Length: 496
Image (cartoon, rainbow, N blue to C red; front, side, top):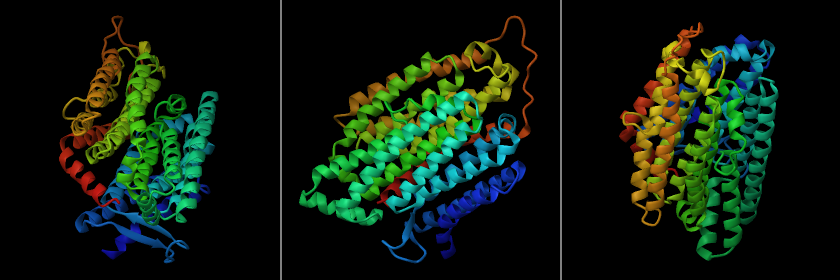
């Protein structure tokens, strides 16, 4: 069992080296290598999850066998291993669901470049999940940004390049703020290793020295990651980035990239600053307000959209608001609800993007709602899958979205001062979600009086299987929510 301690490091290296090897392969070879690597990393993550669950502990892996500060560390427990496994599953499903579109929309000579970006994205996500060093986290934040930009602009259309440019500008702004905060934290503590930084921060808080610089540092790091994860009002880049990229890119960007930054923020809250100190800093109140605003503004923007891809994109702004609202509650229950919503949103939003492309395919690739009338009859599989995703986002029982809203409601009740605004906005957001998602479902199931166009779905078996897997994953999250919530609670308890 001791060999399993090497699996997190092996997973990161495997993804990075596969990107290097893919540069010498043609598109088909790079695709097969990527599928193998994502699957292999998922298996390694599953083994790591089992190992940490059985032992109930977290472990430190010293890279190069040199202790800090000369060496680097990886730290992993049940939460990190489970999140890595989940990321691999969503990435594999997203790629399989958009495999045919990748072949059609990308220049065959650049298909291997696409999978290089995917491999780099996977390695950066794994590093953000596992690393115990702040500067290493920053390095992989930048790798993540570059890979995400490559995935957006790979289609080489004017709108895709414009969207990638806007994404790059906003991401660099967020990275810059995060780096400034990191430098200030290093200046105050003299450490980059998360556990050592936390000891110094606790000492600073106990002595009452450098409290204002510490507050500024926390604010800079939080705002930097909030910009990169598209928290309202820093979301302007998101609709174009998701709306004009390939369907697999949109699914991975919405489900994985933003969640990697949020998971890093959770690590900073628990493992760097300390949860109690973070709550006392009152920055959670700012996150709470922005989260509530995002829940409303993202939904209202989605209602106004007439493009199905952009509507789904704006919905992500609202869902990111849910997560930050949970942070803002300042309780363990709120954090558990936010982590569960990371899983629920990743599983559901990727399902919506992948099923949505099946609907637009039978509408002559038109994304406008008026052209999607009756599309669910011409692509039955995509129509049913989109309906499941919509019901989950609305919060219908049986699906993962219902559990998320239930956990947020329970967490809000435990916070006396924030209970009323949280519950009111949850209710309003649910109504708004119902308006734009049910409007779409009604549209795709509205019969055309003059008969159906000649375009009917000829789905690849892999596409239909992927949709089925997404639906099953959503139902599993909804039906087996208690063990998953217990796993999250256990993971957070050993996270610090």
